[in-house]
Amino acid sequence: MNPTTSTLRRLSFPEDESTFRQVWGWIQQRKRFYAALGGALDWEQYKARYQRPGQATLGLWVNDELETLVEVEQIDTGVFEIHAMSRPKADAEFVRQAVYTVGWYLFAKFHAQRLLSMVPTFNPRARKLATDCGMDLRTPAFSSRTEIYGIDRAEFLRNHQNNATRS
Image (tube, rainbow, N blue to C red):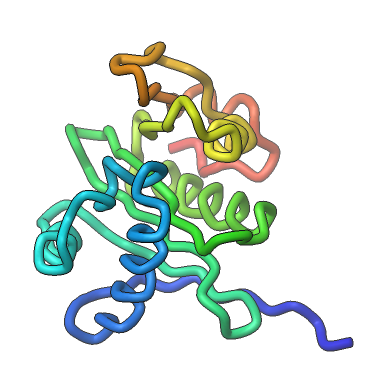
């Protein structure tokens, strides 16, 4: 049996357009789960979303198969929003590791003060992903479909063994 390999790398247009198209296809299959992340957008609108300033997108490949896309956007000084969009039946542990690694990097290298994520109330896997990455519920459903989960820098540094440098 071959060992599992994974690669996390930053994506950009136009070089990675085929990867973005693949993820857009996942989203179109499950529009309800990804309404806030492009489910209601046509391809041109979706493409424009991933070319905004202050936004970065990373892809996770497991054994050369795209598993998930992690989107990060700075929404205020020291405050970042983070989301994952995964292929159907994606390996939850690989997705968790990717999101956690990106969060760790934001705290360690960008001195983030807070990470937030909008989580659909009807998606238990998304809630589990947020809590497994150390986030907790910050704002109960501000609509009937979305809750905000988050983690602050001090909380992250205090509660995680492999944490960001205390700087």
